[in-house]
Structures are given as C-alpha cells and as structure tokens.
Amino acid sequence: MLETTTQQPTQTTPNTALAASARGLTKTYGRGDAQVHALRGVDLDLPAGRFTAIMGPSGSGKSTLMHCLAGLDQPNSGSVAAAGVALESLDDTALTRFRRDHLGFVFQAFNLLPMLTAGQNILLPLELSGRGQDADTKARYDYVIGVLGLTDRIGHRPSELSGGQQQRVAIARALVSNPAIVFADEPTGNLDSESSAEVLGFLRRSVRELGQTVVMVTHELEAAAYADDVVVINDGVVVAHLAEPSAEQLVAALRARTGAPHDNGQGAA
Image 1 (spheres, rainbow, N blue to C red):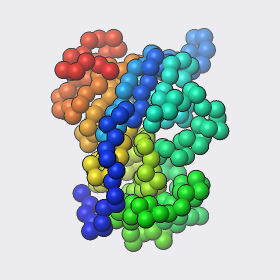
Image 2: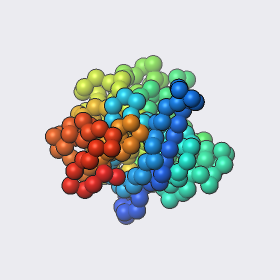
Image 3: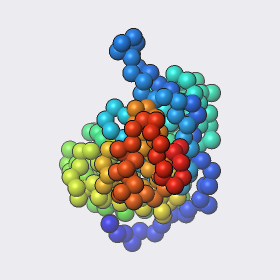
C-alpha cells in the first residue's frame, strides 16, 4: 500500500446514517419479446462510512442498480434516496446539481479531459460548483494526491500518464470535493494487477481514514475482497447482503439462483 507523510486533513464525525437506500426498485428495458427486467423490486440499504461492493454475473443488473442509486438512470418504479435526498423529488436540473455537489464517480474509462493537467482534472469538480479552496479542501487535496502517489505527476496531462496513474487521478477527482458517496463502476477493469491493488487499497483507505462512503460495482472476487460489505445481485434481485464475508461465502452467494434461499447469517437484503 502507498505511504505518505502528508498531514491528514480534518475529518468530521463519522456518519452512521444510511448513505443510500432503495425500495421496490424496478427497471425494464425494451418492449414485448425483447423486454429485459434489469431490476425486479429491489430493496436495499447501504450504510454510510463503509466500502460496499455490488457483485453479480454479466447482465445481473448490478450496474443498473448503481446507476439508479446514483441518479444516473431513473427506475420505472420504486424510490431511491442518496445522502438523505429522495431522488424522485428532483427535476433534471436539480438532479444534475445534486450529483455535482454531493456524489463522486469513478468509471472503468478514466474520463479525464486531455487538454487539462492531472491537477486541473482533479480540481475540476470544485471549479464547476463554484466552490473555493478553503484550508480543509487544500489539506484534503494535498493528502489525497500524496497518498495516491500523484504529487510529482500533477503537472502532467493524461497522455503522459500510465493507465494506473490516470485512474488514480480519476479517484482523486472523485474524492477531493468530499462527496457524500463515491460510486465506482468497475474501476480496475482496465488496470493490471499491481495497479488494481493500489487503486483498491486507496479506496479502502479513503473509507478508513477519511470517513468516505464507497459503492463499487465489480465482477472480480479479488476486488470485492477489499470491501466491508458485499451485495450480490442475480437476475435483477438481491440474493445476498454480506458483511465482511469470507471468500467461501462470496462464492456461495454468487452461485445462488434467483429466488433460492441463501442463509448468510443475516438474511438477504
């Protein structure tokens, strides 16, 4: 894991409330014989201040679930709350502003602006929201880039960075504005094993040291092992919600069929 001597920024009291929740969430694509039920009445509570992985096979609905929780997609029915806000109560403009001000995003594609330096990419959300850089924000910026090993890469453009470095810039950009939740969709999908371990280690470290909430979609057992909680979804239904599961529990949950009982000691979410 990366080390730094950068002073850690001020951390607020950990939030013990729910980071996000869903009730009766359904999402359908297409019509007639081509209709696909991506989500089938999902109920889910995600605690704040923890690292949650959402897992499932291809086509299980895991990315659709994350996109609905993050307000990137609208469900056909049901309700979603994120950071204490009912997303269905927001119009398009208010929803865009809410995502900008309260959520962070990390995707498999790094989505960095090629004409900006790494430092400019990281600070872009703050500039777009019109927020100044106060002492706490500056301390958080210095701490994040230090831990991610980006201090000597801040002046480089994305084309001058490796894939792992570009993803670390994307993670720093998601974290620097101190969002209520960071949503990460297959963040290590384009990385080698060493870079993946560094990225996942920092996501976990951001939860431990910054009190961050992270929700990550992944299909990799190795990535899910970094999480505190793992939600397993199959055929649009949550089949298990595990706290600090063993590898054996994860494998058993991933093999569970929709509607089949799965005893994980807590019950399915």
